[in-house]
Length: 165
Image 1 (spheres, rainbow, N blue to C red):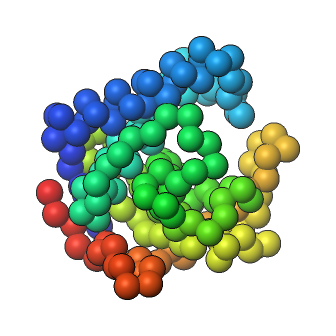
Image 2: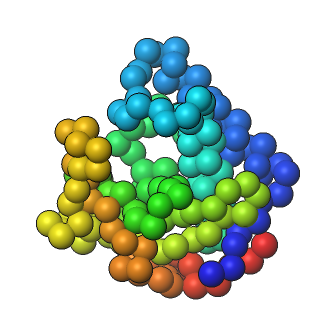
Image 3: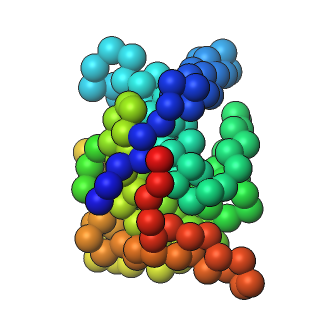
């Protein structure tokens, strides 16, 4: 699939949002759910996650309104949760309820939209796992099982079948 390339300003926006999220977590003494595999991994992943949100909004023609400390609330609008990963699966948490889960991959400056799945559809036993045995099971949907194309909710359609930019 063709990538979504961010401009310098879009990368700065995403990286600043990620830095803000990371700094807020540090200042509130929040502990990461998993140990870092290399120094500053959490900072990097916060930044790449926020840049993936920017890229998805650019791709889908949606306004990006960044958030910080909005746990349990969708990243985009009322019902879109964007997940960045370097793996070939989309992680869906048991706490993700009634949201479209979007899989993004890539790195600065180019990200890839891998597809989407409705959160309730993702909660299948065959995809449930606890990698690393951290006591945090989730659902890991292979990107090959994700839906492509439009996300339809009522009369509104989020076009995701073509890439621009």
